[in-house]
Length: 188
Image (cartoon, rainbow, N blue to C red; front, side):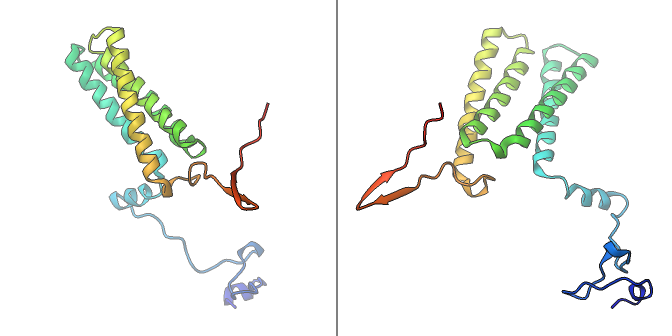
């Protein structure tokens, strides 16, 4: 048993001979502190999950694209920066919401959520260039449909990485000698 723990009356754990810290004992091992500077930032960045980092990076890119689009449309300096900041904040918040709840959504709904977010964002940015509402809406709808198909393809071909497993696996039940599929019971 650890000498420090023995002096202070702490009990050793029965299974492995380690000191139980909840009874007042302290261990000699220290938790590593992050290094200062860039190495510390690199270590902290490893602990940020992709469901947080990817929406933030994507929103930053979208905000910069919005600044570029409004700047080329004629807005200079401050107004272009405000449009970019608004695009970053709103798309980042919505992206975080979609990424947070994506594990509870079925595949088609998840793809539709990503398609709707992308389509609305691209339609809005397209309208900032002075295009008509009808043309901007058609562009946003087209971009949303493209994102829906792309997301659906990615989600369907990478099923092993889906957090909720395969999409509605069908089980077959054998009765006698024939196979019958079990249908869900009506809920209303």
